[in-house]
Image (tube, rainbow, N blue to C red):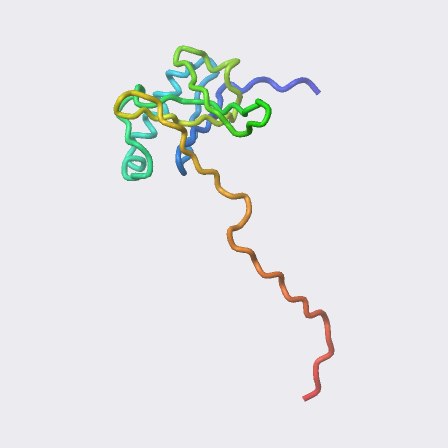
Length: 140
C-alpha cells in the first residue's frame, strides 16, 4: 500500500474557554492567515453574544499557541508557546492539530490560556440495571 498523500487543506482546532473553532486552511497558509480566520469566527454574531471570553477587535488582541508538555523532572503540566505569525503551517502543524487562544490584556501582555476540557466520563453515575432473570410467574 503506497503512503498516504498529505492533505491539500489542514483542519485546525482552536480552543478557548468552552469554545472550539474549526478552521480549514491550505498547507501553504501562514499563522497570520490562521489568525485572520480565527478573528472572523471570534467576531461573528454567535461569539460576540457570549461573555465567557474576551472580545477582540484585531489579530493583535490574541496569539495562537500550541501546547507543549512539560518534560522537566518533578514538574508535570502543559505550557503554551505562541506561534510566530510569519511562519508557514506546513512543517509546523499537523492536520487536526489543536491550538489555543492566548488573549492580551489592556497593557498588551499575554494572559494565561483558559480552556476547559469536557470530562470523558459522565458526571452522574448510572445505577446498574437490576437483573431479575427469568422466573416462573407466581400463581394467583
